[in-house]
Image (cartoon, rainbow, N blue to C red; front, side, top):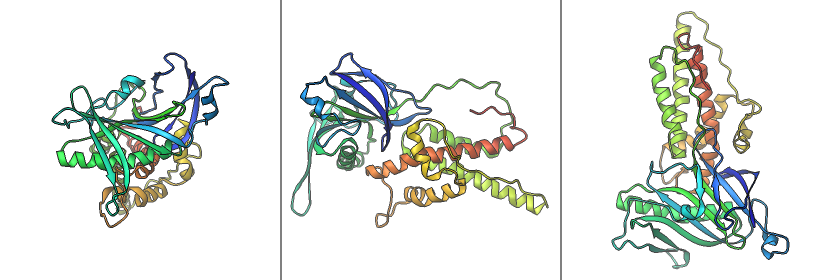
Length: 357
């Protein structure tokens, strides 16, 4: 048996087969994760391939897996601790996990969910502990239609319980990664935060830092260093709002002084270079003005994230579809924030020679 690996976004999107085959430790592969341009959630799909004649070879189904039984493991984590990965040893990974909640006897717990009206069972799963006796992993076995469908079902089952545990114990709980294994074939999908590429330092460092850029650069750094896609989205959007306000104030001053305001026309290019799985995020917006994309995402995501009215349509971390929507829009809103900020910095005479990747 050997393995074939592909990757994509956590929330779905296009699968790319990178042609890698792992023949060592076939029952327990160790995977070196391809580094994205910056820290980001990624989804690796590892397809088990069997020799001709093996009954399991008939079950292979590309990157989607098949309807059947699945085992889902949510690796819990303490936010900010061991957040990003560059290598995964599957056996060690499945035995990892941590939290700040410890059962008195150090043993795991079984959770049974049922409907309120007729007490119909919804799910029955385990929350395991680590060697230190703290809650570390959520294990769910379920029947599903494929990796994405199972990921969505399992997430929506487990997330509400984790949110209750977090609130009732006043302790932060993060899902550091998810491993979904197809029982029939052994193929699996991994959803984890992957460490970004190392960037070469740009020298010389020069230019006069303008006060108006400090808040924008601070918000951008906060977004880039974030581990929560919802918080990252809001921070990047703050950069866009900040630059929009600066431009509006500058235009007003220029008009008052009889000057001609700077002509600014910014659009998403027709083709966005970079990872193929990111390009699907840009496809609906290719060739569109930044202002159009900003307003579209403000109405769809930003406002639903920033406000919480349980009687209205909101976006929450416990719902997989909401995560997928926000994660899909994140590369677009990041691109706009970065390019708008770049344009403002380079338009300033004191910083026009600044070096920016």
